[in-house]
Length: 451
Image 1 (cartoon, rainbow, N blue to C red):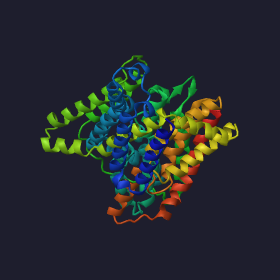
Image 2 (cartoon, rainbow, N blue to C red):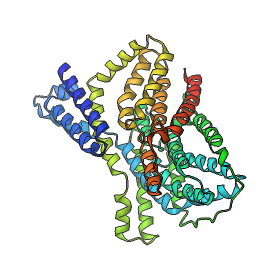
Image 3 (cartoon, rainbow, N blue to C red):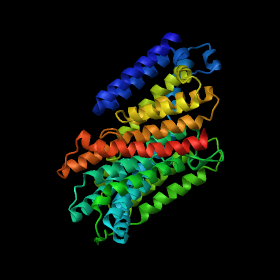
Image 4 (cartoon, one colour):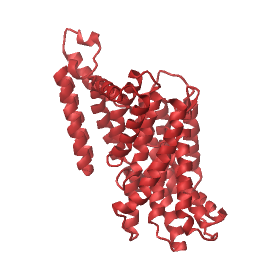
């Protein structure tokens, strides 16, 4: 058991290092690592996975080997989270196609008293959309609006586009469907959609993030105040259809209602969102009269890489958890803080910000959630204090650098196509103060509510 524990850890460490240095090949590395863990578990079922005693006591060793295989595929992988992600990606793509976000943004611009206020309002709207739509999709929705506004004002769009990325990353943390890290957190902590608003009689993640949102809007208001001009008029984008907005609203309210339903069936939320996605695809094909090739393109352009990447990560981290390594790490962190809850809080928050500024936050948060929760339990405090710190630090920390989050990379790519190059220092001019201000604001409320 001891030696196998460290073999599993070695596989995970090598996988993470390769993912960090070779981002374009990350799917290969996680898939190979997951395959190695499954094979190791099948050869040594007692040492890798938590196999029930009745199966281990079987006369034949085959049931134990077979269990290790099925356990890794059906128990460790969280298919409910993957179904939610897949369905919400389809709805987000159709929401972009509908041009409803563009119409809303045009309305904001036409009703704003100045261009500086309009810029901040559009950034706030970006955050609001990102609460329910994946971050990259949100940036793609809002980028044309930001670029068009900057052309009319003859402004350099660089900092506006950076603002779109960091605001989408910020608000993507607020709900269960906003971003993969939130879904992963919900999976581990057993949170429903409603728990992101109120949990245990206390304000939860959503309201903590909104504190950061308000601080971020104030930051951008003063940042863009020097570019504020008189009110301008814009031509309104024609809406293709309101149906994707209906799907989005049904998804939000449906997930809220499902949160109140207590059932042993663990895929209710996932199947609900997935079915809505299927309905959306059928609507796109039949009612929008799209060709089969156009439907295939819609499906093909979904973020399949992240889906399969998460599958590999789920398996590797599941094996690490079942070998007891994460419990060992939680005890180590608890000893390192000397029993101080504030020291533990600051360490988790700061380390999460720094690491997520350079490393994909999905594998990081999957690896660290059990450690943060276990550390809090070992110190006899609310697990939410440390788990929320981990979630907020890892998601907001992605705003620190131009490659800290996928939305950042997309934003830089769009600017490059427009003829504007963003260097590392240029990003830091916005990324560092924005990250420090929003994280500090959110962390203060988190400490007051849960410490």
